[in-house]
Amino acid sequence: MLTNSRRTAVLLSAVIASALILTACSGQAQAESMPEVIKFGVPPGEADPAMLDEMQPVADLIADATGLPVEVTKTSDYLAIVEAMRSKLLDVALFSPMPTVIAQDVANVKPLVAGLGAPYKALIICRPDAGVKSLADIQDHSFAFVDPGSTSGNYIPRLMLTRAGVDLDELDSVFAGGHDVATLSVKQGSTDCAAVASMLLPDMVEAGAIAESDYEIIAESDPLPISIVIIARDGLDPAITESITDAFVDSQSVDVLNVTGATELVRAEDADWTMFEDSAEELGLEFKDVE
Image 1: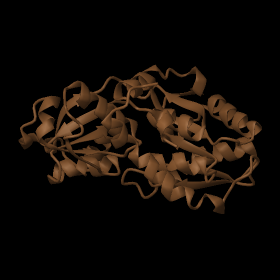
Image 2 (image 1 turned 120 degrees about the horizontal axis):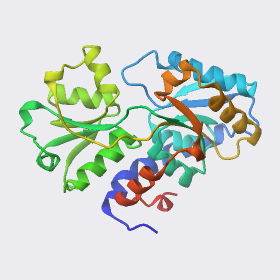
Image 3 (image 1 turned 30 degrees about the vertical axis):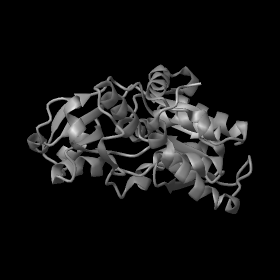
């Protein structure tokens, strides 16, 4: 059993809140193990109203593999997906690697496929005039995390700050809700610093949403070995989960790889989860306490 800490309550309170809200409506749609429609959940996009259209290659792959229609549902955040799966409101979802550990423990989900090979890190950026020169300096500044369930926007940045001696309980911080919103909070001056995924920041610069002169990169994490995970709810028919897994691993479709931000798709058990498991332990997360 891992050690309790005040950080556990901060990090996991959103899971509990999500559970209380979504469990109330779980009786409305208790999916059978062999559904008539595959309900596929995706996290919110980053300032991209066309996200659901961009997910079509993934939905088509699942539909072809299972022979069932696929209903793509955009969710409010990663932790909402956890409870939606526990309540059987979703069958399959596109997920982040770090909260996959939580989802396995609290919702008994099954990781099917892992996306590997993307040049992907967690960045911590600050306004150039904020006077922040190191991670330790952030203690006295405001900070925007992304989403409670985000690997690069919450968990890994928390680990980076903790290792630098920042007291997260005393840090003036908020959850912005998206990588784009967190980044723009630095540009607009509503926060001094923010977390953002490395692959998203250049896209925002190219789109003109932010200029390189609007921020400084204070720190970056080690490369994250898994970019995305395809997970399935507990009780979904094994024939469906196996057909979905085989379809992703065998396909290696360029369109699907582009959507998932990966260069290779492998069975989840063949991926290296060590970094995320070690990070969870170092952060003091007690997944068994979330009921």
